[in-house]
Amino acid sequence: LERLSDPTVPLTPMATLMLALALAGKEPGQTALAVDAFVQCRGDGRLDRAALATTARDLLRTRIVKAARYAKSLRAALGIDPDGSAAVVEVLATLLEADPATPPKDTATLLELLQEATLSAGLPLPRVARTALEAMKATGKARALRASLLAQP
Image 1 (cartoon, rainbow, N blue to C red):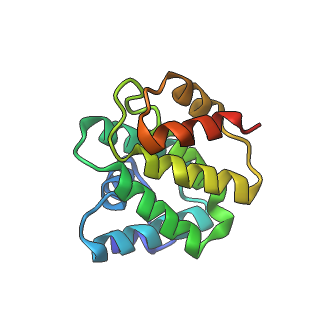
Image 2 (image 1 turned 90 degrees about the horizontal axis):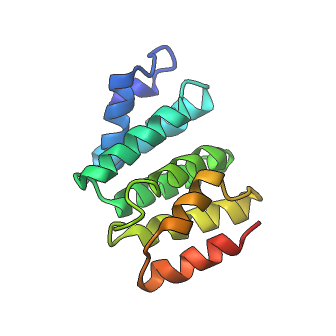
């Protein structure tokens, strides 16, 4: 994982899988390395945002990882690199596709960060996010966030 911060190391499909898993990691040291790698790869142009987003979405579908951990890691990445908003928004939008019919209980954390990132960076809500939100069976806090996001331009 540390090697991903090296700008000469390519972000292969296996490296992307490792990054996606580590961004949802439970161990704080591992997650910090993943956040640093995400920021570094995005900054030097090695990050394939679509590949990372779909890999993370597929992992979330398995319920092996938690949405809240992705939200925490991506929030940390934005704290380090506010210019990475577009990459974070793309990952978050794709994560919403994981299971809109029965979203994970911690989906509100993703929605909250998506709303913050789009509004603070002046980014439109991605089409993939809007489609997932329209199909989402949200409850509680996620329901209110869903409505608020759908009201965005």
